Length: 150
Image 1 (cartoon, one colour):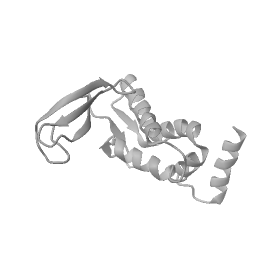
Image 2: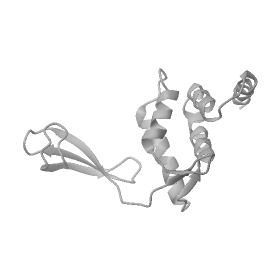
Image 3: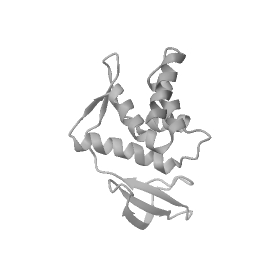
């Protein structure tokens, strides 16, 4: 593992423990050369999850892409990034637990929304407005009404 500060390839493991979701090993490392401490995560290698887009083409599931969407939806909201990471972990685990290697993008969006509504309703509406691509104010208002009725 290369040190993020000096680029040295030698480090020693200071601490190891399971990640919060128990799907990885979290390791605290210390660079042999400069003493910088950094964290790495070790996950088992699995078949890549594929997202089937509306036009039929497939792309690899990208945690960072989902995180960017969630961060945009939660901007200026009091939602910890760790909670968003756990949301993504849950989605990824659900797909793997059900033995799925492909998921339609619409279904992935629904999975995000189902979890996000319990975390922050404003973020839910923001994410839904992009994901559902509301055509007019009536569609947006209808979504707000259904959220209020819940």
